[in-house]
Length: 331
Image 1 (tube, one colour):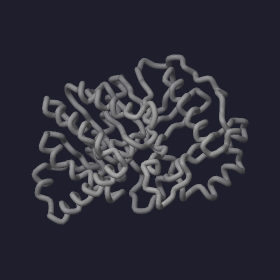
Image 2 (image 1 turned 120 degrees about the vertical axis):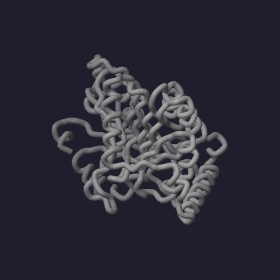
Image 3 (image 1 turned 180 degrees about the vertical axis):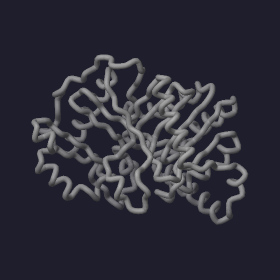
């Protein structure tokens, strides 16, 4: 609202499901301050079980004056006042300048215009007001990668798989909601089989019960094939990042689960730069030392029967739901 008062134009898109409880008073307050607010797929019907219901807008992007952008996994949320949670969440975003701004700006503008038409606000569609500042400002090589339900259905997963398949020394992945398909799991275990160290930093706290227990059905096979698993318990893990061979890295919004890889609109930045990758790698290992606990293969296979039953029931339900929405055959 302060930016609008200075003469700037402020456009905000929120997901109709993720922000549905907040939009009443917030919408009115922003409108009064001149901020234009749009909802992505605002109609949530409890009796609608089609796959369209789960096609959400999960990107976390901001572009300011075509000069700077932010890409990552961080929601705009008051992290200090979330019930049942030890703040803050563990998450990442990157500040972006340079030629890759052009692609980020185009995607942000395109999504805004699509949602404006879908909400019958054609008068809110925008044309480029600020030309992206695309001159080089550093030496890193970077690409902006998105997932949507049209031309970029598997771009983010393909970027991960290409990096994993080329790995020679180490793969470190931190992911909040980890429930990959067979292709992704096979790539990880094959990497471990050829001597690559594979480390997964995953959510240790229970946030979404079904996914929490279902994902643990994958632990046994991964551990047996030499994949290391660390569970982050210090606070809620919300990161979606990875480092491969200390040179390739990604930071973004995409989890490694069916919702992100098969349904949601996601956005990641992929960076090829040893200094950037090493800084991210050091941050991840520091988080493991300070707030994570290693999953030991022997202890994992000696779990109480009741816990194993919960895991396999959750796994069965999750697989059933994926099949209901039509994606089980492909992944």
